[in-house]
Image (cartoon, rainbow, N blue to C red; front, side, top):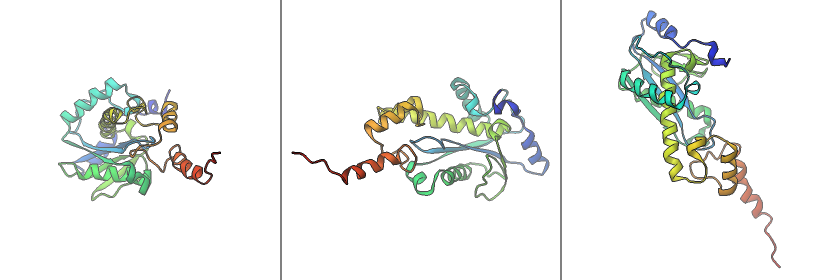
Length: 221
């Protein structure tokens, strides 16, 4: 049994927020903290109370087919939804934790309807002009957060499929930028692209290698 199986993904946190007078409750989540390549992506979703989403849970626990199904359903039934990206250069500049929080804040700001309460996956709050609650494993416990998880995951995976064509050789369509053996081998062979996270272990070492080599030039006789 996985950790996610211990939780029930339902409306408990949304009901508590509504009982406290909150009306527009947005679930917020991000994906892509661990990859060596590409942006971190966040989504914010406001669902109508009690909409039918049986089987929806943490996007990592769903098959690709199920994620695509729920992505389409959420986009159709949601009051509103929004997506935001923070690119690799910004991740390198401010670190991945702050970049993730920034992506979530931007996604909330892009919602067409202004939320009056946020349910955020994890344990880090974001800058927002409304109340909020952080929930560890929230994507497996709150349907609003699970919806945001799926929308962000499907968006990022499809983006990496497109970038696979732009940056061939790294297997991005398969590994989605994560540090698989295939991806690491390609980095050693081809070097990092402008969309690799140069502050991440596995990339930063390759950036240092040319400098180290230049300090000891080969002598040709």
